[in-house]
Figure (cartoon, helix red, strand yellow):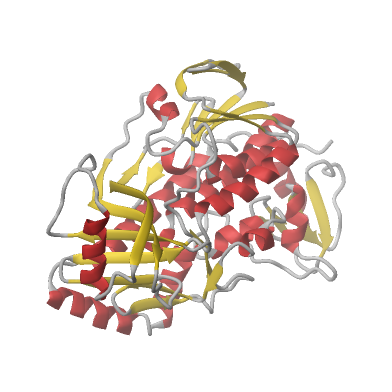
Length: 453
C-alpha cells in the first residue's frame, strides 16, 4: 500500500510512523525546507500520552518537558488533573518541536520517507488511486492524507470549503529571553484590556502570547517588541525583564471545520480538517488523535481485511470530536477574554464554585485532557495490568488485542490474545470495539476483523 501524507507536523508524522510500522510504503511531503524551532503548541494532554505509550515513546516525550497537575484556564479558575483515570494524570508542557522530533525519528526508523521543500498543488483521483501533483513532481498513491495545516493545499485541491470565523484577532506572539522569569511553568493573566500567557521552551527562551483589546489590527501590521512588553506589563504588572527577541508575529485564531474528512481516497486530518482557539491547548492533541484513529484503519485496508465501511468510520468518529473541541475551546477563550470587570469577577466566582461539583470537574478535565472523549459504540479503554505486561504495551504491535480466557484461531496476523477473565476486544487505538460473552465472540471477530484466515 502506497500512502502519501502532506504535512510533517505532529499529525502527519504520527500517521507516517503508524503506517510504515504496519508495512506500508509511506512518503511525507513537507513544504518547510528544513526543521524549525518555532512552535505554537506547548501542551501534551493525558490521552495523547496514552497514545504515545501505545507506541513506546511516552517516556521519551515526557523527558522533554514539565508535568503540571493543575491547568489554569483563566483568572483564578484552574482544573485539577490529578484525579484523571490514567497513568498520566497531568498535562505535559513541552514545545511542539520536541514532539515532532521524536515522532519523526520513529517514522524514519519504521521506513517512512520525508521529502522537504515540496508543496501540494493539485490532485487527481479515481477508484484505483490518487495522483498527487506538487511543485517538485508527481507522486502516485493508493491513499492521500492532507495533514498540511490550516492553509491545506490538499483541502484546496479538493475544493472543500472551510467554514467558520475568527475567534481572536490580533494575537501577538514573541519568543524572548526573560531576566526575571515567572515562578510558575504556565503563567496566565487578564487585566483590563490586556491578556497574556507565558510558557518556557526549556532552553532559556520563553513564548509569550499577548492580546490587547484596545489595539486590534490586521496580521500584516508590523509588530514591535515594545507593544508586546506594554501588553504583558498591563496584564501582569511586570514584563519579567523581557530582553532579546528571536521571533515576532501577529496572527488571528480561527474556529473552522471542514464538513467532510474523507473524499474518495483522500482524507483530511489535524489543522487541515479543523482549527480551534488556543484555549486549553487542545489543537495539536486533537490532530494526533485523528492520526491514531485513521492509521490502523488505513493499515487494515492495505492488508485486505478491513470490514466494509471501516474507513468511513473515520468521518463518523473524528468529525464529532472536532466539533466538540471547537465548542469547548471557543467557550474557554471567550470566557478568558471577557471585557467587563464584573463579568470576569462573576466568571471566576461561578467557575470556581462549579468546579467543586464532581460531575462538572470530571466533565471539564475529561474533555480538555481527551480522557473523557469516547466514540459511538467504542469507549476509551483504560490500561490494564495483565501480569507481567500491560494492555498498552501490547498495543505497541499495532494490532487489536483480545482480552479473554480463550484464544481464537485464524486471526493471528491481526490480533493479539491476552488471558483475562473478561472478554473485551480492544482496537489498536485503545478504544473498545466489543465486550461480551463467549457465544458472541466469533460474530464480533468477524464484524471487526473480517473473516479468519
